[in-house]
Amino acid sequence: MAYENLKLATAAISGDVYLTRILKNGVMSDNRRIITDECLAATADWFLANDKSCKNWEAIGDVHPHLFFTGDLNKAKRIKAILEEKVAE
Image 1 (tube, rainbow, N blue to C red):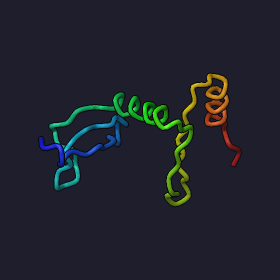
Image 2: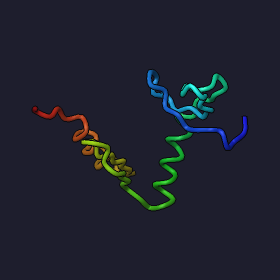
Image 3: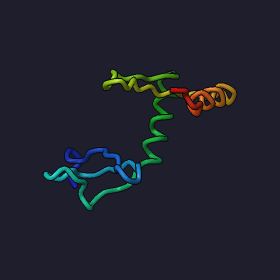
């Protein structure tokens, strides 16, 4: 597998992150490797190495993606509680 042909892809059903080739029909090659844990570890390393606590991307429709990082357990608990809140519609 040539490195320039490799892509990161997220499986629709399992949610796992794969390092794979994407075939012409748009599906992942059978020659692939699950790298979910490695991606998460590299993301945490990026936040630490760059002294960052938040990363956001341009909105995709009504979705405004943000990713947060903290080593503070109290902040983590508060952020998690906010994210798990049920929003009244």
